Length: 101
Image 1 (tube, rainbow, N blue to C red):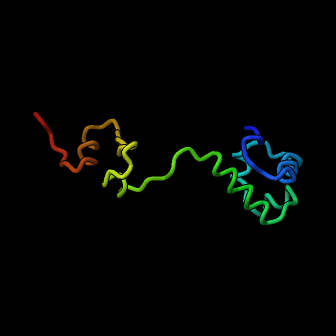
Image 2: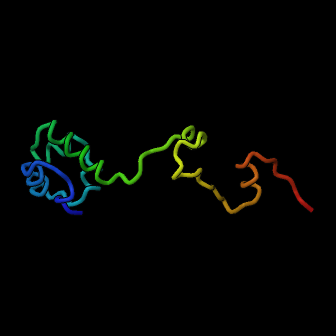
Image 3: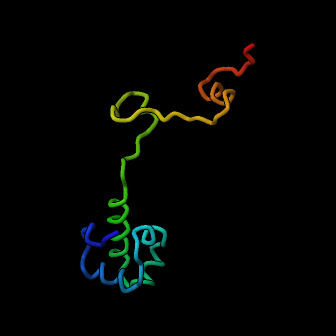
């Protein structure tokens, strides 16, 4: 993780480094008040820091089941779930598990 990857005020970056917060994960795992105490930044600066870091680590936008059903997200398909047990697979697909001879 490099603080140069995100657009932040140099004052904020310096405060985060001084507080020994090294990773984006650390920033996101700390509450706003905890970050304020550690970095001595204002509420607005901490909020902007959290939003900027969250946007930097977000890989894909969330997609609802309705969007998948309607086909509004052509790059995605419904995830396949697999438990490893055939009876669970049938139940998940809406079928009735039965013994096949």
